[in-house]
Every structure is written in C-alpha cells, then in structure tokens.
Image 1 (cartoon, rainbow, N blue to C red):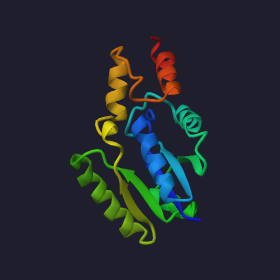
Image 2: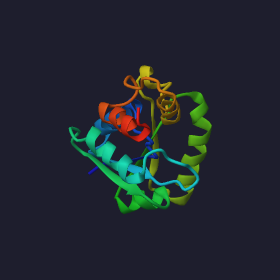
Image 3: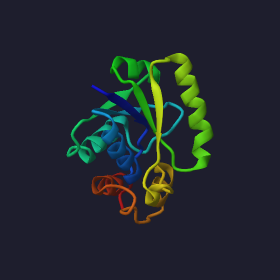
Length: 159
C-alpha cells in the first residue's frame, strides 16, 4: 500500500487543506492526516476539536485517516509505514521553509520522501491564520472553510 502523511496544525482545517488531501489521495492509496500539537503556538481549537473537524470533513473520502502527531514527523511516518510526506505550497514564500524541512527530514530518514502539492488557484491565498483573524473580527469565513468549521467558529467565538 502506498501511504503518505499530510501533517499540519489544521487550526482550523480550510478548503485549501481539503484540496491538498484530495490531490494527495489521487496519488496514494492512503493519506494519513497528522494533526500536530505545537507547544509554541496558541491554537484556537484544541487538538481534539481539530481531529474531530478533520474527521467530519473527510468522512466521505475513502483512504483518508486522521491521527494525532506528537514527536518527530519522520518517526511518525516510519511508524505508519508511509513512504512520503505531503506538504502544500501556496506561494514561493512557503518554499524556503518547506525546502529546509524536507532536507532535514531526508537527513533524519532517507526512506521517506517529501512531495509538494499546490492547491487550486482559488485557495492559494487561504491560510488558517488569516481565516482565524477574519472570524475573530466578525467577518464571513464561509468561502474559506467547510460548514462545520464555520459553526465551530460561531460556538468558539460566540458570534
């Protein structure tokens, strides 16, 4: 089975993330969406909430599994028998950081490749950070995130 890991914080999952998951699924038999806990970030949604939202939005996608990620990504990939890590690139500005990470991951585990996928053009400007800011300021985020995320924002921000 060709398995890939698609890691991220997904705080929250956006339509751009879903697009990358769907693209990755066309290339791999199974895509494990690995939801990372980063103690250097202050997420709006808890790890459990992010896992739950991803399970909801990927429920209709065969071959997609949602899992928490704690520790080194390459170790997780090896544990999952994955041969690839999928990373989304929205713009050239993403590339430098992602390139460094890919090289470091290759140094740590040479059997796991990094694959870069670009989302559809209409999603290239979407980021979780920007979507959260729009929601916090009372803006309409329906064009950027799935309906269950819109509802979660309403509950979380009491709007």
